[in-house]
Image (cartoon, rainbow, N blue to C red; front, side, top):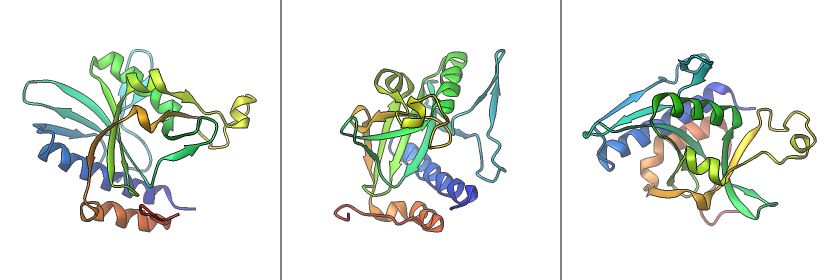
Length: 193
């Protein structure tokens, strides 16, 4: 089983690639990165009156003073959900709840950006769109009220609900690919089974 540190390294490489893209293509003026990838698994938290909430990876600012929160995920590819006959992405339901708290308290939108290594795509979806299009895990244990087979219950949404932001050249993904290789999971490319 790959180590948590290996997954952190892949996530950090994905965040760096997305941050560079945001500066170069989306013309943002500043980004606050809330974790350097070297922590021991303890996420950066926002303390609210009600509870602690995990902060998304990046706080992004534009010259006009607007800002949003961005959580970046790097996956090999979207999963296929047979029940819904759709390609899907998902993250921990616990994180969705934390990001809803962050959005409420800060008054700023939360977006999830997913970098898929197989097709080199960067896709985005707002937390509001996840709440509109998403569903909680439908594995048999979850449906039976037992602990999720994935460990932490997940919230999923169809890839079709996401906006395609950019398609990277394969060379641009080198650092993320190298981190993926350390996890020792194969990186499949378009046209491979």
